[in-house]
Length: 224
Image (cartoon, rainbow, N blue to C red; front, top):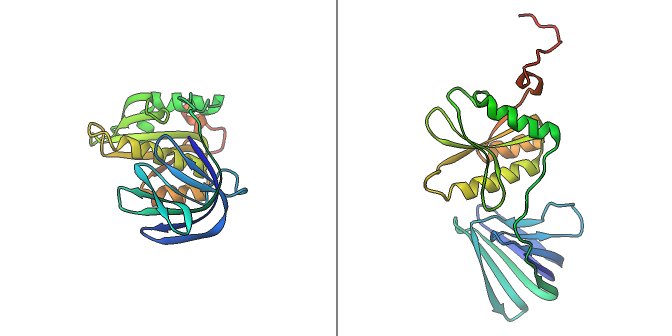
């Protein structure tokens, strides 16, 4: 990972245009090729970013120390003009073991793998914890039409879970043996913002009934 703290301005050119005026920011360049720009607030969420697959070129310009041009496969560009660099370092983080799920979330994944038909009629399981270069996909399945489906399982479905599944899908769809790969975001509860983002990205949302998956009937009164 490359960490750069610099006074910079940023322009995004693509389906829409966006501009960040000059300010001091943290720039992250990760091993997967992604580039993100961060301010000293907003927790983990970047001000702007470019997800892989993408590539970066560094150019010299008269009014700045450097110009980073980050381009994705759609031709969209993130143009970062570095006016003054305070820090520039590179660190080897190695392979991350991934997020260790809590008991309920891990059990949800296990139960959904055992009852994969919950995802839809005709679904079959290819593998749990399908390995990728950026971490394991919770479930990799096939739908009734033979299409590949990546499933991310959460206890609470939030925006970061949708982002995680999006990264998996971008990577899996580069594999001609798997592509095209669609996504399912499955959780006990899904926040409206996460559902909106997932829908916008063509990811299906599925609310899971943990008790039903465990085979425990609800104690609530039913009409039928």
